[in-house]
Amino acid sequence: MRSHTEEPPLIPDQRRQKFLELLSAHEVLSVHQLTELLGVSHMTVRRDIGELVSQGVAAVVPGGVRSARSVAVEPSFDAKASSERAQKAAIGLAAGKLLRDDGVYYLDAGTTTSSLLPAIRALAAPTVVTNDFTIVSSLIGDAHVEVVHIGGKLDHANRSSVGHLAAGVLRQLAVDIAFVSASSWDAQRGVTTPSAEKVDVKLAAMEVASSAVLLATSSKLGSYSIYRVCGLDRFSTVITDEGISEADAAAVREIGVELVTAAVQG
Image 1 (cartoon, rainbow, N blue to C red):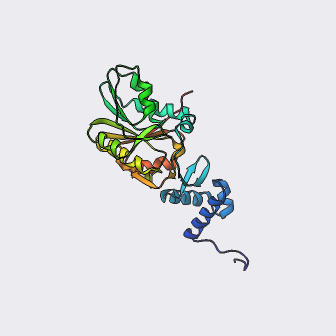
Image 2: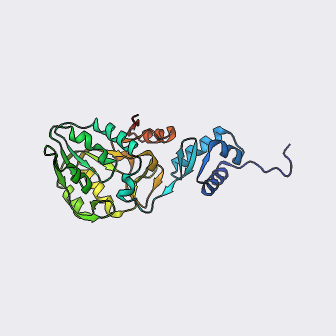
Image 3: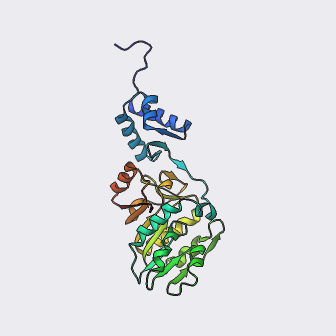
């Protein structure tokens, strides 16, 4: 018989609300911590995690869970260039397997998409279309690579062009594969960005491409920004690193998208 002082068990909605309150008070919680704090089994905690991840309010990390992060400002080029180099190189190596010698490829602005450059240079006669000034600068001297920069309004922090002028040029072209970057993405919200001027460029690239491939590190999974680009179902393939959790990988595959997890070399 339950004592008068013992708290009655929480119904699932109450328990998940308590779950979110705990996450808001702690950056990350392990499954073990949650079982103790909520007084439920590991199975119940994992079921709750799956439900909250599907709602886009939580994200899985190795051994535990965290709140979904809102990204208000995209990091600068310099900040991105110095982070996760091994993961980005692995993603570039995996994406390079999709290329052919005479293909036309859109490389979205970003340090993850620029990880494709070694594979691009190894091709006989590729064409690169991009809004990224650093990618253009890197290919100067590679005479066998035809390069088209789409122009438009300069985004100083990210060394790229954005806005309707850039999107308008893209819509006059045709490319084989659009390799799209993302500063925030998840199965629930898809690809999002804190910059409205980037949305039209990404969409234009996907519209003129035979297929679109998302290149994004797993650290950005489970975060979101104010402007939605598209759902993950708009991509034929998502390529990320092996840091993605099994739960998140399953959520992506359930959308019907091919998921490639690239292993870091060495």
